[in-house]
Image 1 (cartoon, one colour):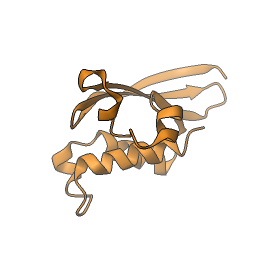
Image 2 (cartoon, rainbow, N blue to C red):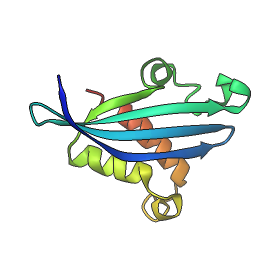
Image 3 (tube, helix red, strand yellow):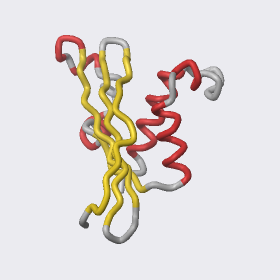
Image 4 (cartoon, rainbow, N blue to C red):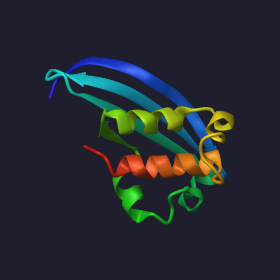
Length: 116
């Protein structure tokens, strides 16, 4: 499919213990009018050691989604992206007893299940 428009949505990072995640999110519109989030991840773990990766115990994620995912834009994915890029202090108001960072990790995992 041919991309007719591309818009940068977010460029930033999350700091996990011993690992920093750089996130780039673009919203691509294709020639058929459908829109998809192109989510790219770059993980920089302490000493380059994969043992420090937040998803070290999730082989499926590491094999299939470590570098990112492409997800169809709809009301669910919009809200997930909104929460993923939200400031941690603001997200703390929305995620109950879970920390913002843990919540964002769960969002990243959830987005990987919606790849298209």
